[in-house]
Amino acid sequence: MGQTDVSPTTKIRDRLIAALHSAESDDPQGVRARTLRLVQCAMRDRDVTARGEGNCSGCEEADIRKFLEIMVAQREISAREFDESGRIAEAEREREEMEILESFLPQPLQGEALEDAVDDVVNDLEASKLKDMGRCMAELQSRYPGRIETGPANKAVRRALG
Image 1: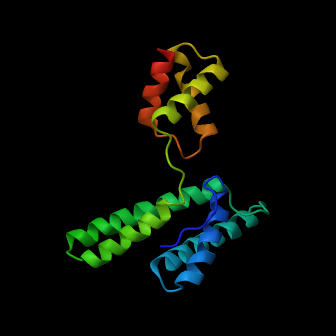
Image 2: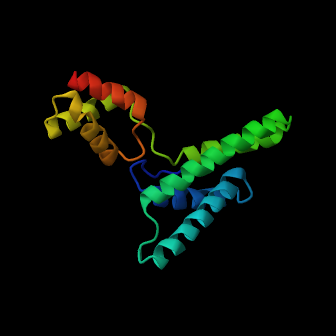
C-alpha cells in the first residue's frame, strides 16, 4: 500500500486527496484506491450539504474526521460478522479498509505527550482544584480535537490537579 509524502499535520482532506492520487497511479483497482474513492464520495456528499447550508468551503475537518470514524466502526462490525459466518476473506478485506481509513485519523495523545498537554492546559487555565477538571477536559478536547481519549486524559488531569 503506497503512502504519500504528506505531513500528518496537513488537513485530513488534503491528505486524502494526495493519497487517492497516489493510489490511483499505483493500482487503480486496488483496495486502497477503491477505499479512498469511497471516502472522496462521502466527502463530496457532505460538501454539497455544507454548501447548501451556506458554508462555501464545504464540510469542516471535524465532519471529515467524524465520518471516517463512522466508516471505521462500520468495518469493525462487518469484519466481526464475516468472521462469525466463516467468510474470512471478506473479513480480511474489511480490516484492510479499516486500516486505510484509520491512517487518516489523528492518533490519540498518550504517555508523555498527554502529560505535557495536560500540564499546559492546567497552567494556562490556572486550574488548581478538582472542580476545575471539567474546564480542563473541555479545553484539552478543544485544543486537540479527536486526539483525547477520555479515560487516560481524566486520570492525567486528576494527577495534575491532585
